[in-house]
Length: 78
Image 1 (cartoon, rainbow, N blue to C red):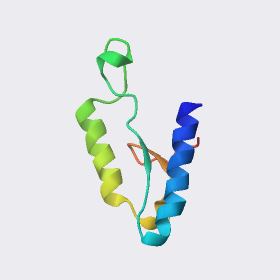
Image 2: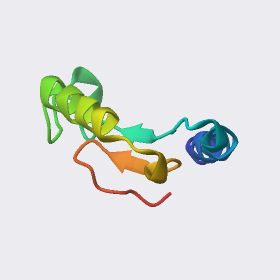
Image 3: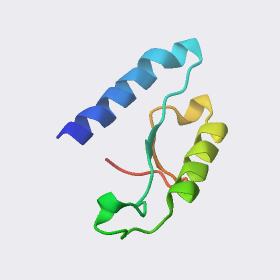
């Protein structure tokens, strides 16, 4: 429930800030290869994940506010 609540808070914030021209996006880093993913299991290394997240931020436009995005740009349902 905490992840759903966080996403709902992001969407609520996006509605509040849109009239001021501020976009809000919720980002998912992907399955990153770290010790936390069970001994380095994952689909993407940390540097690639960070590059993807930065690209999503750089591409962010007001009409995309409130979306939940994967680091690769896929819109994720929540």
